Length: 162
Image (cartoon, rainbow, N blue to C red; front, side, top):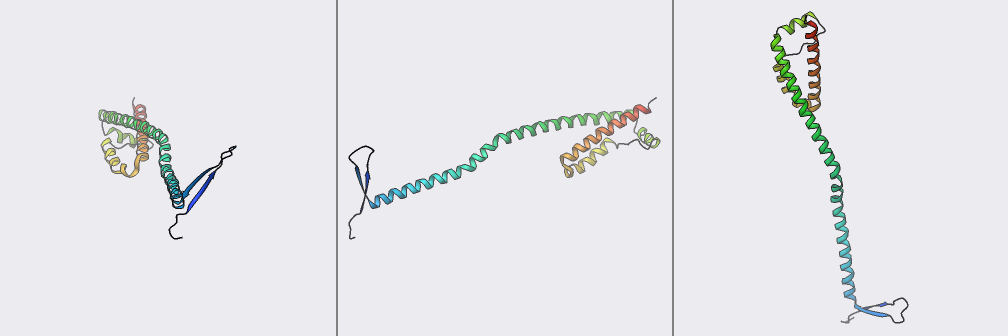
């Protein structure tokens, strides 16, 4: 073992051929080739494992786009309802101003089952204080409650009118 180079001989025998091919490699060359192949396989496994989360995230994109589109439609409906509510509140304030502010309290005293809505400005101030605590669901409930109160008041006015 003084300085002799050791070799590895690989015999390749093609099917049906009488002669074999002989490949003689130095042992260090074979070890280098095996190390390089191991490194390449390890690199490929690393790339595959690193690429998997990216593929997973990319597969979720279509469903997220559908959700965004649905939420944009919901926001458009909410804006439309908010505009309708503002219009109803303006009309309510106009009707209340035309009738007179003192008519509603006297109607409320005459009938205990008749609901009395507070003035529009007072409601807006109260809602502004509580909206950030309640969130969207609270505002929706307030809007539907306001609309039903407005309808009850209209019915009461129509019933009280001669």
